[in-house]
Image 1: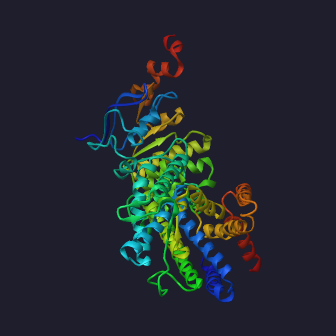
Image 2: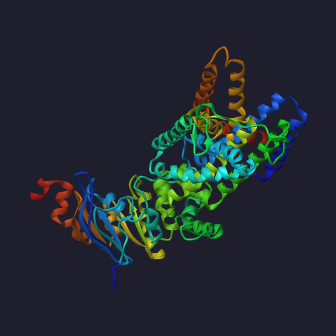
Image 3: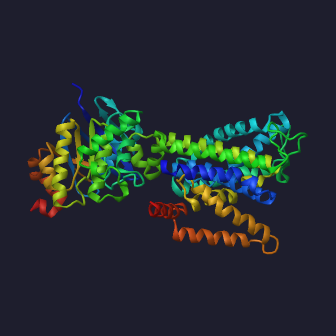
Amino acid sequence: MRGNLPVVLGVVAAAVLFPVVVRDPYFIHAAIMILLSAYLASSWNILGGLAGQHSFGHSAFFGIGAYASTILSLYYHVPPLLGMALGGIVASVISIGIGYPCFKLRGPYFALATLAFTEIFRIVVTSTEQIGGIDLKGAAGILIPLQPGASVLNFQFSTKIWYYYLILAMLLVILVVYRWMERSRWGLYLAAIRDNEDAARSIGISATRYKMIALAVSAFFGATAGTFYAQFLLYIEPALFSSAFSIEILLIAIVGGAGTLLGPFLGALILTPISELTRTYLGGTYAGVQLIIYGSVLVAVMMFAPQGLINPLKRGWRLLAERRL
Amino acid sequence: MVPFFRIEHLEKRFGGLAAVHNVSMSVAEGEIVGLIGPNGAGKTTLFNVITGVYAPRRGRVLLRGENIAGLKPERICAMGIGRTFQIVKPFPTLTVLDNAKVAAFCRTTSHEEAEATAMDTLRFLALEEKAYTLAGHLTLAGKKRLEMARALATKPVFLLLDETLAGLNHTEIDRMIETVQRIRAERGVTILAVEHVMRAVMKISDRVVVMDEGKKIAEGTPEEVVRNPEVIKAYLGDDYGSA
């Protein structure tokens, strides 16, 4: 890993310079969406990859984060950047309520239970116009008004470049957190639980507790992605809670390589442009074509690289490195 | 004197089936006790009740006088009971060393200490050369030794071995018998072993307990047990027993 340090620094430098070199706002927008997907899939990866619990309900936390920071900002004048942290905490607390019943189930049953939970959120938010004094606006969604004077405090910027750097920094943070968790005692516990829960418990690992911790951390970061999304597009809607979106998140992680540091990033790099481009060019005339392309990519990955695309890439990289020496 | 380990009137049912029916037995500190019986006798279920996988419907499991029946598996491990699984359950994506290390965390939070314990355990079981191999790549014999290494790394006082010899060849069985004897001699661990290989049972056990259809049908030295007509009947059927 040490030997890869120059490569890591090079990639980070390239990412930092990207918006300076490529000034086209369309590409910067696309890059932001890729980084956001990578960030979101990485947050899923903490539970899905490290702990092996394939949640089909991650969009619930994304939606909670988006709605929490928006409501806090519109009704209580909490700056969205603080709202981001608060939304993350709210999502963590709720995730424990979801995790407690769901973790009694395993494998596909766990996946189905999490899917059900996110659908509950979607339906409740869709059909709730008002709660307390707060307008949720149901299916219509909430428009976030532009604030006079763009600033970090408002979490609104005059150019997209600042959103780009923010999400890039967030992605670096989550990758560092992931690597740190992976190498800690907890990471080893989570790997043991992922590999065989019965054996893990037989050597004294409290499986439920550590799965809960992984879920709470995963939910926290997932919710912060939601706040970023809300502040970037200035519009939130109940579709953020949809199970289809949940599945998109986990596909990104799995196609790239679940349980690896850079798998979700690779997955986002491949899948997000496909979904953006097909939606842009084919969405109007041939609605649904993007799903066919998406599905084909998925089938190909499952057939030829079931552990994710990161593994063949790593092997290739190692071969190259050896040849160079 | 409080007995080291004791089961009293243990009962576990699956629906109408009494997998373990009114079983009582005890193990003295430092003993190696063999647990035998035909397939479906309830040996593995008994193990699963002792180690907390199942809560018993009735009865007590006493470790040094403390009732551990119904506690969670992770709690029971912390109290000093280690186990291996009949169907090996290594952590395939971790190295052999990490398999043992994660178990060693049962007694320490220090990475250095856990790694030292793990390495020591691997050396004890002659697995140190495989330390950096992925556990999923070991042979069956290797995985069986790893099961033991992982259980031992939690520093148990009482070890339950579930068919450690099944599926091994002659040479591997001999090595494993020697290993089991060394676990008691050098580590001072008391052992309860489910085993089908009679040659091994006779050789390692101080005492043998025989189960059939959920009940304990006999108990004694290996020599006594193999001559017991009840045992012969359980293994070979009624005709042979009455003949």
